[in-house]
Image (cartoon, rainbow, N blue to C red; front, top):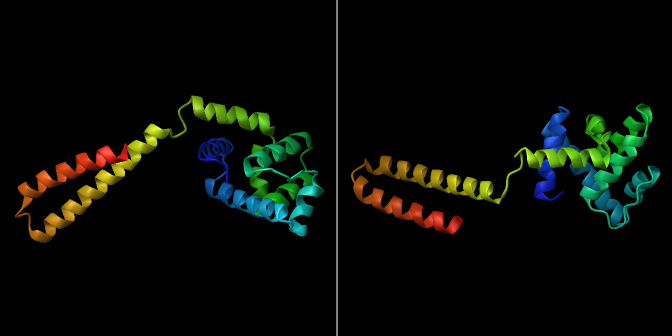
Length: 173
Protein backbone atom coordinates (compact mmCIF):
# COMPACT_ATOMS: atom_id res chain seq x y z
CA UNK A 1 0.00 0.00 0.00
CA UNK A 2 1.05 3.61 -0.40
CA UNK A 3 2.89 5.51 2.32
CA UNK A 4 0.79 6.77 5.23
CA UNK A 5 0.76 10.32 3.84
CA UNK A 6 0.00 9.17 0.29
CA UNK A 7 -2.87 7.03 1.57
CA UNK A 8 -4.32 10.00 3.46
CA UNK A 9 -4.06 12.17 0.35
CA UNK A 10 -5.77 9.52 -1.75
CA UNK A 11 -8.53 9.12 0.84
CA UNK A 12 -9.09 12.89 0.79
CA UNK A 13 -9.20 12.84 -3.02
CA UNK A 14 -11.71 10.01 -3.32
CA UNK A 15 -13.97 11.68 -0.77
CA UNK A 16 -14.18 14.70 -3.10
CA UNK A 17 -15.74 12.36 -5.67
CA UNK A 18 -18.04 10.62 -3.17
CA UNK A 19 -16.14 7.35 -3.42
CA UNK A 20 -16.62 5.37 -0.20
CA UNK A 21 -13.39 4.69 1.64
CA UNK A 22 -14.19 0.97 1.91
CA UNK A 23 -14.56 0.88 -1.89
CA UNK A 24 -11.15 2.52 -2.21
CA UNK A 25 -9.65 0.02 0.20
CA UNK A 26 -11.01 -2.98 -1.70
CA UNK A 27 -9.95 -1.49 -5.04
CA UNK A 28 -6.40 -0.82 -3.86
CA UNK A 29 -6.20 -4.30 -2.35
CA UNK A 30 -7.04 -5.88 -5.70
CA UNK A 31 -4.69 -3.59 -7.63
CA UNK A 32 -1.90 -4.29 -5.14
CA UNK A 33 -2.42 -8.07 -5.35
CA UNK A 34 -2.41 -7.93 -9.15
CA UNK A 35 0.71 -5.76 -9.21
CA UNK A 36 2.63 -8.04 -6.84
CA UNK A 37 1.53 -11.17 -8.71
CA UNK A 38 2.57 -9.59 -12.02
CA UNK A 39 5.97 -8.58 -10.63
CA UNK A 40 6.48 -12.13 -9.35
CA UNK A 41 5.85 -13.48 -12.82
CA UNK A 42 2.16 -14.32 -12.64
CA UNK A 43 1.16 -14.51 -16.31
CA UNK A 44 -2.53 -13.62 -15.84
CA UNK A 45 -1.76 -10.63 -13.65
CA UNK A 46 1.04 -9.43 -15.95
CA UNK A 47 -1.32 -9.70 -18.92
CA UNK A 48 -3.76 -7.29 -17.28
CA UNK A 49 -1.12 -4.57 -17.05
CA UNK A 50 0.44 -5.20 -20.45
CA UNK A 51 -3.01 -5.20 -22.07
CA UNK A 52 -3.30 -1.54 -21.07
CA UNK A 53 0.33 -0.65 -21.83
CA UNK A 54 1.33 -0.33 -18.18
CA UNK A 55 4.97 -1.17 -17.41
CA UNK A 56 5.18 -2.80 -13.97
CA UNK A 57 8.94 -3.16 -13.55
CA UNK A 58 10.16 -1.45 -10.39
CA UNK A 59 6.77 0.16 -9.89
CA UNK A 60 5.21 0.56 -6.47
CA UNK A 61 1.48 0.91 -5.90
CA UNK A 62 1.60 4.68 -5.54
CA UNK A 63 3.46 5.09 -8.84
CA UNK A 64 1.14 2.63 -10.59
CA UNK A 65 -1.92 4.59 -9.50
CA UNK A 66 -0.39 7.68 -11.11
CA UNK A 67 0.33 5.81 -14.35
CA UNK A 68 -3.18 4.38 -14.46
CA UNK A 69 -4.65 7.84 -13.80
CA UNK A 70 -2.65 9.28 -16.71
CA UNK A 71 -4.05 6.55 -18.99
CA UNK A 72 -7.61 7.23 -17.81
CA UNK A 73 -7.26 10.97 -18.35
CA UNK A 74 -6.46 10.37 -22.03
CA UNK A 75 -9.13 7.74 -22.67
CA UNK A 76 -12.67 8.63 -23.72
CA UNK A 77 -15.39 7.63 -21.29
CA UNK A 78 -17.17 4.45 -22.22
CA UNK A 79 -17.18 0.69 -22.02
CA UNK A 80 -13.43 0.29 -22.61
CA UNK A 81 -12.53 2.59 -19.73
CA UNK A 82 -15.03 0.87 -17.43
CA UNK A 83 -13.68 -2.54 -18.40
CA UNK A 84 -10.12 -1.38 -17.71
CA UNK A 85 -11.12 -0.03 -14.30
CA UNK A 86 -12.81 -3.28 -13.37
CA UNK A 87 -9.91 -5.45 -14.57
CA UNK A 88 -7.36 -3.42 -12.62
CA UNK A 89 -9.38 -2.66 -9.48
CA UNK A 90 -12.06 -5.37 -9.41
CA UNK A 91 -15.81 -4.78 -9.28
CA UNK A 92 -15.33 -1.50 -7.43
CA UNK A 93 -13.12 -0.21 -10.23
CA UNK A 94 -15.96 1.67 -11.85
CA UNK A 95 -16.36 3.88 -8.77
CA UNK A 96 -12.73 4.96 -9.20
CA UNK A 97 -13.16 6.29 -12.75
CA UNK A 98 -13.94 9.92 -11.84
CA UNK A 99 -10.93 10.00 -9.53
CA UNK A 100 -8.61 8.40 -12.09
CA UNK A 101 -9.85 10.77 -14.82
CA UNK A 102 -7.95 13.53 -13.01
CA UNK A 103 -4.62 12.08 -14.12
CA UNK A 104 -1.55 12.00 -11.90
CA UNK A 105 -1.32 15.81 -11.97
CA UNK A 106 -4.91 16.09 -10.71
CA UNK A 107 -4.27 13.53 -7.99
CA UNK A 108 -1.23 15.54 -6.94
CA UNK A 109 -3.29 18.76 -6.80
CA UNK A 110 -5.89 17.12 -4.58
CA UNK A 111 -3.11 15.68 -2.41
CA UNK A 112 -1.54 19.12 -2.08
CA UNK A 113 -4.96 20.55 -1.18
CA UNK A 114 -5.38 17.86 1.49
CA UNK A 115 -2.05 18.89 2.99
CA UNK A 116 -2.53 22.66 2.77
CA UNK A 117 -6.05 22.47 4.21
CA UNK A 118 -4.92 20.51 7.26
CA UNK A 119 -6.59 17.25 6.27
CA UNK A 120 -3.50 15.10 6.94
CA UNK A 121 -2.49 13.78 10.31
CA UNK A 122 1.04 14.87 11.07
CA UNK A 123 3.42 13.44 13.67
CA UNK A 124 2.16 15.82 16.38
CA UNK A 125 -1.45 14.78 15.76
CA UNK A 126 -0.49 11.12 15.82
CA UNK A 127 1.44 11.60 19.08
CA UNK A 128 -1.51 13.44 20.62
CA UNK A 129 -3.91 10.65 19.62
CA UNK A 130 -1.60 8.00 21.10
CA UNK A 131 -1.37 10.01 24.31
CA UNK A 132 -5.14 10.49 24.46
CA UNK A 133 -5.74 6.78 23.90
CA UNK A 134 -3.21 5.81 26.59
CA UNK A 135 -4.76 8.27 29.03
CA UNK A 136 -8.27 6.98 28.29
CA UNK A 137 -7.11 3.39 28.78
CA UNK A 138 -5.52 4.29 32.08
CA UNK A 139 -8.64 6.15 33.24
CA UNK A 140 -10.92 3.28 32.24
CA UNK A 141 -8.67 0.80 34.02
CA UNK A 142 -8.69 2.99 37.10
CA UNK A 143 -12.48 3.34 37.01
CA UNK A 144 -12.91 -0.43 36.74
CA UNK A 145 -10.46 -1.07 39.56
CA UNK A 146 -12.09 1.56 41.76
CA UNK A 147 -15.53 0.01 41.23
CA UNK A 148 -14.13 -3.41 41.99
CA UNK A 149 -12.69 -2.39 45.36
CA UNK A 150 -15.52 -0.03 46.23
CA UNK A 151 -13.56 3.22 46.09
CA UNK A 152 -11.90 2.64 49.48
CA UNK A 153 -8.38 3.43 48.28
CA UNK A 154 -9.26 6.33 46.05
CA UNK A 155 -6.79 8.90 47.42
CA UNK A 156 -3.84 6.50 47.31
CA UNK A 157 -4.71 5.32 43.82
CA UNK A 158 -5.24 8.89 42.59
CA UNK A 159 -1.61 9.69 43.43
CA UNK A 160 -0.54 6.50 41.64
CA UNK A 161 -2.64 7.21 38.56
CA UNK A 162 -1.33 10.78 38.27
CA UNK A 163 2.23 9.48 38.50
CA UNK A 164 1.57 6.86 35.84
CA UNK A 165 -0.10 9.41 33.56
CA UNK A 166 2.95 11.68 33.75
CA UNK A 167 5.23 8.71 33.13
CA UNK A 168 3.22 7.56 30.11
CA UNK A 169 3.17 11.09 28.73
CA UNK A 170 6.96 11.23 28.77
CA UNK A 171 7.31 7.88 26.98
CA UNK A 172 4.75 8.59 24.26
CA UNK A 173 6.46 11.76 23.12
